[in-house]
Image (cartoon, rainbow over all chains, first blue to last red; front, side, top):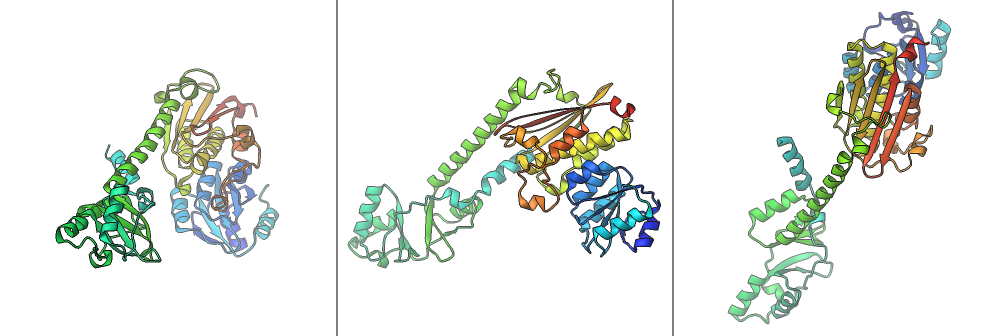
Length: 110
Length: 315
């Protein structure tokens, strides 16, 4: 599914990155090792973890986009790193639960 | 070389004055006579004493030169308060060895009291104290160096593969990354670079991914736990990829316990960043086909992982 469709449907704020990419799977988690263990390539990652290391985790596991929930903000370092690595950063006021539910409903696979 | 010198220099110059000073200060009250001071200097074999009030606040200093002048001038039985040096140059408890040396250069005095923010005497620094502190610190450096040498030179521990037992020519590694940073923000740089390197060598993306995940965990462990620097080596073999991550830090006391899922000794500030889930070794085990961990407390940790190429193909 095109990331841009998701951004539009869930009214996500785009912090950086190209939204004309495809994502197939979804994962939720705030513990980096947990995400490393379970995330699949071409995933969209729902989290409240805004620390710059989320970018390294994404690059290594093949996560294409990160949705930061509950109105948290990315640090400028994280945004710079994401731009350099080509990871799309999104944010929202909504909870991880709601975002996960909506994505599941739209057909994003577990 | 310059870098090494810089590091050594800061290692010494950043020492706190509290590490340098002698905390057992012999001092006198202002109402004592200079003759009494002369006796104290003689018996204690010292060359000067700070003068303090009833709250141990510094009010002056008397040196052996003042005593000589008193003997010459015939006022040796007069009170200290009338002949002491009143403008005492003091060091602050927040000063470092750098400031101590600068103070010695700037003033010709032989000793400087160290005072707290209320001017209370905490200790005293003479050139002898500086020398002794440097020697003590050198002793530590020397010990550390010997310990490293032992680790580095032990063929069984550092130069042989833990998995195959073969001796390892690290200089022949296909990929090398020094983990020479302590900043948790940078954790994973080496693993990301390794992933890119593997992809550039035409390694299957799924395989590059599991190598990178396992390496990320090992690299993060070095940054969070070792308290030292380390290195990542990767060897590409026809049917497998071999990664070794090593450090010379504090080591793991109980490897078996550390391997347990959920077990972590990460401090809270690191956990808040999403680390310390106790999943590191679990992820390494899961991603690799062969994992070996060897550690000696105080000598470091070596993690070796083998990734077989046929795993992707057989799926």
